[in-house]
Image (cartoon, rainbow, N blue to C red; front, side, top):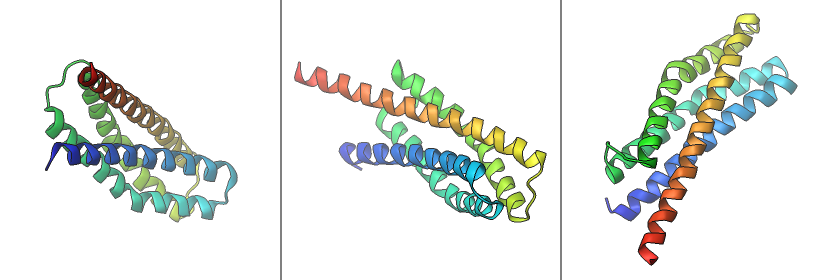
Length: 153
């Protein structure tokens, strides 16, 4: 695959992952604060079915980054790679299980203190991932600007 195409794939996948995390986070908060239990269950089911898109976009982001920049980055790239590892672990070990559990519990009407505790953990983990993905996008833009400045200099 050509470098320019790979860069476009990387950018689109990163933006998709970021927007999905933000959408999941925002829709959960809005539903939790203002919607009925049935609507909360619908939001949780939608997130459960949509999480595969997030996994695929995160994978595409990571794979395209490794193909473009290698697995041993320096400077901002090393920072971005470290954030992605944390975000991936957070997603795999906290967000994915929480999404599945909350979807199940909400579908059976189990809105007890355990549900709300897991929901709180999920929101904190989601905010962390959104922040890390946003910082990676910011740093990717910085890296692109530095590269463009070198080319024009």
